[in-house]
Image (cartoon, rainbow, N blue to C red; front, side):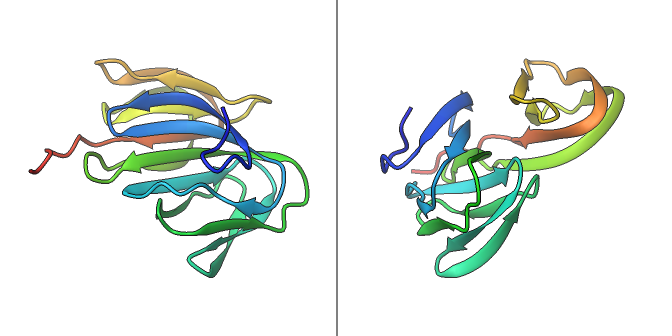
Length: 157
């Protein structure tokens, strides 16, 4: 589906109450879409480039999350080639989410707050989704992105 600003494309991988995880194609420098009231975690999957967030440059490196407010103006610069990135977007009024990159070897039982694991050691990322029980996976030591959602915030009126 197209980005909100129409300048790129993304594929939603998973969504829950107050959050969504997507895979964005980054084809050219330019502005990111605005998501007021949200928090964002951007995870480049390969290469590196500059993100200018609120007029402050950040060197985005492969598999190193960059966090910023959804309403902050963000511009992608210095993109050498087509690449992709995971994006976790969270409604800050209802949930608190983080994206953690880890490596696990063998059978791993992840706690219930790990709602999804994205296997990154393949040409196309593969998502494993947690159910009502802790997620148990057999992993090969390659990088994974874990979506951590400790609990939903109580809605305050």
